[in-house]
Length: 585
Image 1 (cartoon, one colour):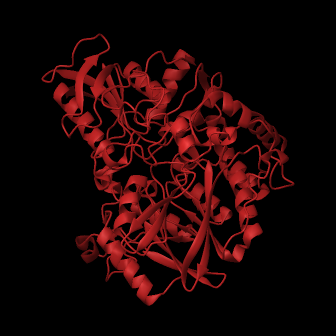
Image 2 (cartoon, one colour):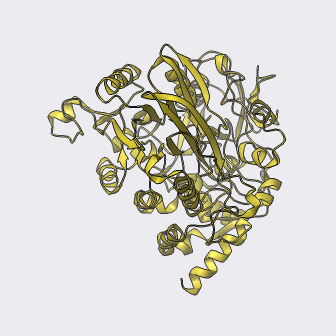
Image 3 (cartoon, one colour):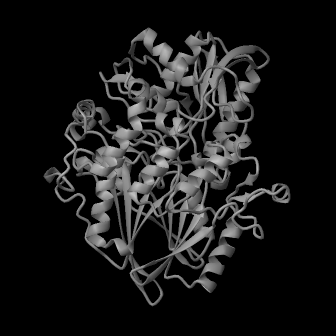
């Protein structure tokens, strides 16, 4: 390590609250947090939605994660104290910080950053080594190749190599498909594990034209499942990629592939695996979102567990879902490398007889930084370090994204779009990825990229009719709050700037959004045209500057960020909903 790298490492460690220690697996302050008792014959380690965060980060959990209809008051739609009480974690201050938004900024100063692949690598090695590597699998639920500047510049390859070092055995995908199809296949070829997805097919017309398929007879674009032998037990891992990829993201990048939930095909596949392979354990590695997984678990029999992702829900214990064939565990392991799920199975008579589950928060100041991974991360970042570390401004308050409606960093993006592009109204997608920044912390270009870095970042300015603005809000709101989980796409509400509105999440499609008013107090007229700025168009490519450049210029100008008002909607009919707390009404 040269002097520059050493100083860089010192700076990173100082911000995290402790130096990366290389001689032992965990700090004594962990107090046994990572000492998981061995149980059974098979251990599955589960990460998901890391969003290319190689470095330790701060990440605030939501104070708004509304459940409506049958999902009201049910996991995962619990926040704050309601979540702690449900899982009986009230007395554990460390768990309160890991799993909730409560007192976040102050607790983050005390507990430091979370995640980071070097720290995650140390924990993976410990969990595998203490149990036995030969009977352990590391599963990645996807959204791994996107979410940072280095992932964007390397087209996801930095994360492929990081996962190879981490030892990922099996993965599925979602944002992986926002690179070009040839790039996706090249990354899969470079991946040392297996990429599985039972619900992605090559379109028939593309097959006739010679498109590549994993199985030309079935039409599967990728291997649908894999069988692993662990400690005398046979484990089947089925892949379930994000079913709405061509709708939520540009289909122009992957024009030959078709997706879907495909519950009936999944049931048929499970039945075939049981009959032909006779595995002891069958799990679905899913990127559906937890509400979808809960419905799927009730309909599809034969799955021992669904290890899920996409909605970024950090859920301390599995939900046990009864179905016609018995019971399926539904687990969700958060995001950003903040957690790792540990699912141990006891197998007897060719089937699962019992299990133990732990969702471990990855506190980077309590875990050693794995030397090999740390060196790799330094190498990946070195060519881009001056750009990543440019200080653009200072946050006077906590900046975050995660939640059903505008977070403070979302508002920053919306304010930047309005000011820099001279628009009345701004719109920003309801992505759930994006890290947090503590009060009085410098806002770097890397922080901005963590919130915006994707393969369709172009901004736009358009004249839009008031009626079309309302219909856009209605459409996204229906995606978020539809009573049928199969009709949800798992994101959050579009973020807005320059206007306010009223939202009733419990209403029907077309009736959830009302009283749209500009900041001046004037009503948005349905037949009037308004100048609207935004970014990340799905169905067509815009031509404006990348959003990160727009936000960076705004920050260089204003220098300090203090959000005086969030353009969050006034909500109706959410009283006593356990998925909302401390909401500004």
